[in-house]
Amino acid sequence: MASASRGQWSGKLGFIMAASGSAIGLGNIWRFPYTAGENGGGAFVLLYLIFVALIGIPLVLAELSVGRETELNPAGAFEKLSPGSKWPWLGRLGVLTGFAILAFYAVIAGWTLWYLWEALTGAFSGEITPEVSAQMFTDMTSNPLLAIAFTAAFILLTIVIVQRGISAGIERTTKILMPLLLVILVVLAVRSVTLPGGMDGVKYLFTPDFSKIDFPVVMSAIGQALFSLSLGMGAMITYGSYFPKNENLPQSGIIVAFFDTAIAVLAGLIIFPALFSVGIAPDGGPGLVFIVLPTIFNSLPAGGLFAVAFYALLAIAALTSTISLLEVVVTYFIDEKQWPRKKASWVLGGLCFVVAIPSALAAGGSQFFTNFLGFGIDFLSLQNIFWGNYSLSIGAILLAVFVGWSWGAPKAIESLESSGIKFQGSGLWTVLIRYVCPVAIGIVLIYIIVTGQYF
Ligand code: PHE
Image (cartoon, rainbow, N blue to C red; front, side, top):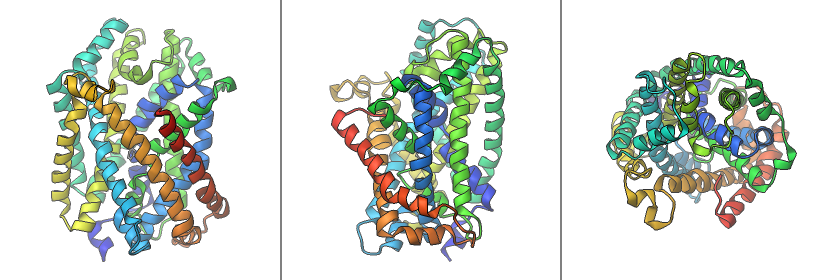
């Protein structure tokens, strides 16, 4: 039996920890706050919540049903459900996308390790001006050896866990790291919200200013929902393929989406109150957690500890996501090429490190990759646009079409109910997966192609 040699989650809880680990990542703690901050706070958050419900959850369930039904990697799964068709190419695109996302995600993840190290050695304990903070960030990210070394360290950590397998590696690690992450988050959020003036940050996050909602904000919210829920490249197909047949899949999928969303909001509750309490504007962009936060640690009580906890949190969140990215690629090589897991993990992880080098050099380490081909954009951002936006959107639309129409919603529902427990809301789900998901994401895709804007 394929399932016996591939391994399985020990149960629902193991799956929920691992899949939430995949979903909760830099997307929640780094990208969500700065995207919300750039897009008007509450208005963005409201749209985001709507899209998680209407698009995110239906797609999570769609991917999970494909994985659980076939117990295979994305390419093998489409082949099994639609033999002889072109659909397996969608799976292969997903595997490639996972590899490519890992190759730039690991670079940013490497920065979090560096910042954790800096926090531990007390680098954020004195007064840090915005100029000094920006300089610290540039000094680190533009140092070619440091950037490459921290990327390597992060990929190495990922490999060491993935090579141990589903239950002994991924499940065991995420069962320790996810509760730890939750504790740090809650403690930091409480600390931040109770700072003097912190409630202004809370208001900013939860009071929608509808005049801020325009087309780009809508697009950013959909894009953020896809990325944050690890959709559009088969991560949930892969994790679903290790899901025990006798457990309630729809319920587990919805719990994962709920955790992911709750944690993005919690991250907002750490960052915005802290910013507002010292009077710093929330629209600092991608540098928000690396450049803006270090300037405020000193003015927070026990700021040094706050810094250590915060960057540990970022690193942990990133690690449980890089694990899932590598796992998609590794599962593909195990199923399709019969590679042993250890070989797949080391060879593909090693290869990914090599492919990550240009991105590691794209923040000043090499002029060529920092201003790639003279386009005025760095190589890392380009990868993010290409794989993190275009490829995920294309993958998500096609997946919705496959599950809704080609394989067919009724069959997917049967698979979602294979534990014998009825899937409440299957009628609504059918409408969402057939019409709402492809149309809404289709609009996003056309929008980003026409305007060249990325979320
Ligand atoms: N969801 C992860 C995050 O929010 C990123 C990710 C995308 C992971 C796609 C796996 C697949 O950081």
